[in-house]
Length: 217
Image (cartoon, rainbow, N blue to C red; front, side, top):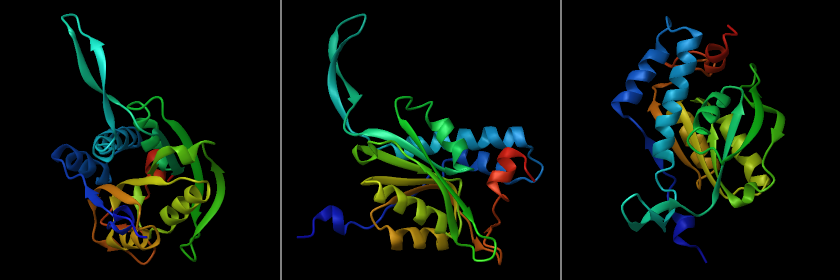
């Protein structure tokens, strides 16, 4: 029997808040240096986390204020895991862990073959209790979508059941591929650009996020 959750369409959220768009425009600027680019990526990640975690469960807990006792909402439900797609996803997970310091952090290493544009896995280290956690996958760029699809499959193979993908920049091709392969995974992104060039890079984009974060190019 099919449940409503199984038939629900995958959700795409574009967090186009003016603060996010302003910071993203600064990231796009070729004149923005490594230090500022890194800071902007972290700041946008924090703002995206507010949107991605909007549906976290809460339950009332009785607390004492300096004036009285009352019930106030506290986080409940599944614990969280932040999983970074290496290497650029690290900047997002590192920023988000400041909001949810009790979250466990995992890493999935993938690189894109320059000839085939297909993802190649080289590393995976995930929390042992990943099946019991709500998982937020981080990768600044959702371009062809191959790396995201492969990373999500790695998580599912490890038992993860509740997964959201968080990106700073996306294109329709990548979104479509992720939703086709994993229709149960929601995507939260800051912006959707026009598309990809012949080399699989987002246009107009912001260049190679990893290189600009780490100053390797």
